[in-house]
Image (cartoon, rainbow, N blue to C red; front, side, top):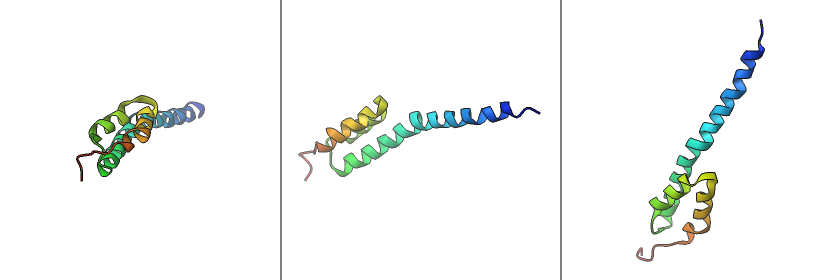
Length: 78
């Protein structure tokens, strides 16, 4: 019996799960975390920052929120 084809399937499954994690689950998690943080800091538009952080590729949106969004505070909030 040749076991080589069976062994070659496992790295592809691992790679597929890693791709799903990086490109589907991570943006959703990033958006959720950014939204909660923006609400806690009373940022003027937390939903917009969550969408930007989740949908801008290569984690640039998360970096933008960390540099710009987290410093914006809603002036109308006491």
